[in-house]
Image (cartoon, rainbow, N blue to C red):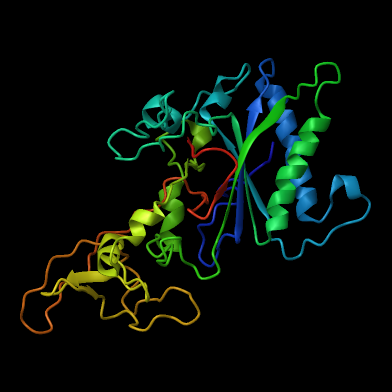
Length: 344
């Protein structure tokens, strides 16, 4: 399998300063055949990894010796192992602690719906009866062109199909489902607010997402967890809310993206005075003039201002909550090939 240098994270984990994910995203799930052991899975993954390195250099197997344009793709590929991968015959390690049953998403009810995670308040959609994202292997692909993502998924299917047993037609690894997503060019989500404004500072991310030595099995040290969760957006209900109500729920001004730090006597949200008051023409979210050492949450805590003139409350100082996965995940812009599901 892919050798990762000591102290280095897999590609496809965007945590360093100035390192941003590409515009398009794909997540492919692979099921291991019933009689396939861990050793054979390792051989297949090593072969896929070599395929991916070729694709990133413009080498498509069915088009060799010609090459295709790749300079604008900036493709990254990340391989993840699900809980069932550690149950394979010949697996060298037990599952990490973060993949035990107490930390996994629940399965939906056979009749549809059901609680996703105890105490979270999140539930599966009523029409979701099966979680399709529970296979042994996942492949994350991120690139600046949609073709690069789609091609990687298709070429994975082709390579695995070609490896199937001639007599049974069964391959060691079988694609079961995939999910696609993209970033909007205006940097907003489908609820029309700026997206991604409350991320952790780049310099704080690596320490937050990597597994600490001594807290897990030794082989896990320096690794990361990936969680995949797709959220449905109820646009009809959202659009019935007045803009003021939307802004209070999100904690941001809808046009400028500036954080709301207080509520006036008239109930109107008040934004951070250190943030630009004009909506950016470029569509990019604004940057505040305040110190970056005081990140804000997506929904900041505030209290109503008194009725005296020019009274505001101090902006919250609670650090922004970072993603627990350390890997890029699909946004609400994602297109589905199957019903909503979760994988961890």
